[in-house]
Length: 305
Ligand code: FDA
Image 1 (tube, rainbow, N blue to C red):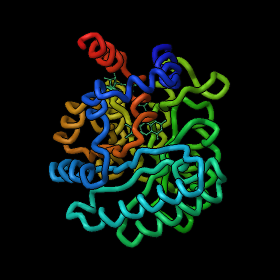
Image 2 (cartoon, helix red, strand yellow):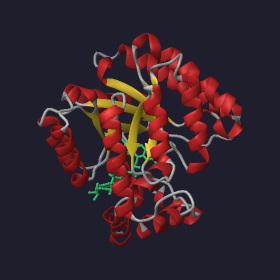
Image 3 (cartoon, rainbow, N blue to C red):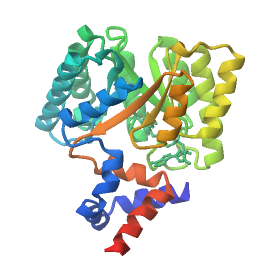
């Protein structure tokens, strides 16, 4: 956790951002980002779908500062929905979106209206649109937006982060509504007043939340690359006789491809989260912070030149 904190703090510094955006890092960026435009990324998604995976497309971008940018993002998502609807693999592809990309920093009503427009574009095609969960100042606001929209749009849902103290309560709020939840450990830098700081505690809470969702949730997404947790949950699923079609595993494009394949070959539903777009830096820095080897790769390539 100390490493993660350090890298996230480093990533917020402009010189680090400038260096990371240089051509030197392109190979590593390419590992985590499926392309700069929808056409390229959708091809990647369709390739996964052809091989039996489910897919979630994510246009990278967050914290827009103007209504015009929020409008642009919304239109890009609507265009994405139209492209997915034309795909022969449309039944396997859904969408992930960040509400701050839809203008949440300018007000919850704006983000809600923009999210609603995307949901409207997706609903006739049966495309599900999940609101990713961002840093803790947005948690309650995101949960409330889902509570507002879900009665009309059963194609919306969100993400809950096991590292937050509040999450067990949010899990119950979502179970009560029958809204779909993706459970993750949590990727942002959070203070100890709101989030557990010890990996062991986060892992323990993750397993607890995931079990509650598996037992009572509506088609939960168990999103982790932690093989120990996956093994424990597989055991639980077996004991409780939970059918495979009641949930799915989710993993990130470029992370633990071996594990993705193993789960798929074992007959589970596995969805790959596929990010694309030019605004990749914040997403990429969170991926760097998750694994010391990623940063080592960056440092090594610096010294190779
Ligand atoms: P953990 O970090 O303990 O990693 C377990 C193992 O997985 C590592 O030992 C390593 O082998 C591998 N691994 C993990 N990350 C890696 C990386 N970047 N590079 C290489 N190997 C890596 N978070 C959030 O706050 N809001 C959100 O909306 C989402 N959405 C989301 C969607 C999906 C589909 C996934 C899988 C994850 C997210 N996350 C997220 C990110 C999540 O919170 C978390 O930061 C990462 O999944 C890493 O945690 P793990 O559960 O994989 O465990």
